[in-house]
Structures are given as C-alpha cells and as structure tokens.
Length: 282
Image 1 (cartoon, helix red, strand yellow):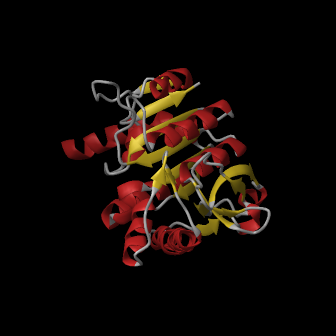
Image 2 (cartoon, rainbow, N blue to C red; image 1 turned 120 degrees about the horizontal axis):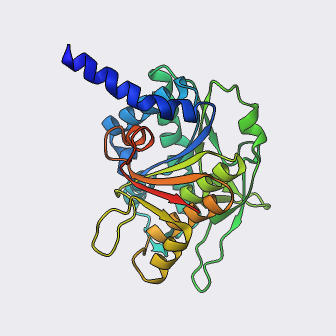
C-alpha cells in the first residue's frame, strides 16, 4: 500500500505544474546521443505523449549530428566544423537531408504513432515553414549552412491540434538551394514565433557549467554573454546558448538546457521544483 501512496503523492506534486502549463506551447529540441539510443528515444516519446495528453501543445524540432557523421564516414565524405557549424558542401548537404528529413524524422513520427500519439513529419521546406539564407562564415566558407530569416507558423496552426509536429531543420534559400539549419536556432525561432511558454533543448550535457564544472541551475541572458566572453562557454555550446538568448529576447518565457540521456529528463525538468538542468530567463 505504501508504494501506491508514494506514487499518488508524486502525481499530486506534479498537479500545480499541470494546471499551470495546460494549453501552453512547449518547443522541444531533440538530438544528441538520445537520437541514436532506441531506449532513450522511446522513453522520450512516451513522456511527450503524456505531456500532450494533459493538454500541453508540443512541437518537436530535431537534430541528428551523430547519425549524419555515421553516414558521412560510410560514404568517405570528410567531416569539418567551424565555430560549432558543420561545413556543408553539396555532397554533405545531400546526406544531411537524407538523415534529417528521412531517417530521423520518420523514425520519430513512427514511434509517436506506435505509442498512441499522432504525429506529422515536416521539414523547413514544407509550406516554407523555415525561410533561410546562407550564413557568412567570414574567411571560412561554411557552404550550404542556413540561418533562419522567418518562420511561417500558418502551417503549424493549420494542423489538427491533436497532432504533434516533428520538424527537420532543413530549409532552402531564395534560389532553391537546400540549406542545413542549426536545429537549436530553428527551435528557437519557432518557439519565438509561436510565443511559446518554454523552449527545452535536450543535449549531451547536464546544462551550463561554471568554472568549477558544477551545474548552474538558473541563469540570465546577461550572465551567459559574460560566460561566453570569459571562455567558460566555448565551442559548440556558443551557438547553442546564442539560440537560447535569441529565444528569451524574442519573448519565450523560459529556456531549459537539459541532459537528454537521463530517463524522463523532460518530466523531471518540468514537474519538479529544482529541475535537473539549466533554466535561462531574461
């Protein structure tokens, strides 16, 4: 009996959060090691379906860098990065689109449907959902790397609200060239356009760490800018945190960076007082 009482207590602890977030919109960026771990993917999908059932509007934007690297290596295509961006020539772009819009997107849609949800797979090309332009890398040619110019939310609002949109961050420029858009920035732009309550970014790290490598539970845009200047935030975390800054500055109420390799990470972050990652506010 005590075990059942404990379970009921846990549910009751989540009640205030459920009441607060019902009818709100969460944009969740899915990627990292979780994208190549079947058990973690299934756990994530079950959590997402639960959130949907309690009335939270869920939009998933996914990356897939590790799967992309695997296929590039198989095809003997070189892998290079510059300041967190993948250098993307035509051959690499073809692989990126195949992996993101094909394999990962449809796997996520299939899993959501398998576990009782309803999902619709999209790429940034569909309905011009994500309009983009090529990024200038300065002295380094980044290739077919895109930055978001605008989001056409009409296609998302036109979907039956029972569906969960699953979005691959592949877009194109005005000339019709396919572009590889950073998934964090795509998620950030979509969250801002929809005036989302939360943007949740699943990563391979627990969140933002201080100089002693301890988790920073909560921080602000100003503090993040300082950490970038001081070199505490570096490498691939720079574009990630910049996407968080963009989201907050454009009206998203809170951004969370959490470790997606922790089972039920999204639920633990949303439905507990302390959470498990880093919360970012203005």
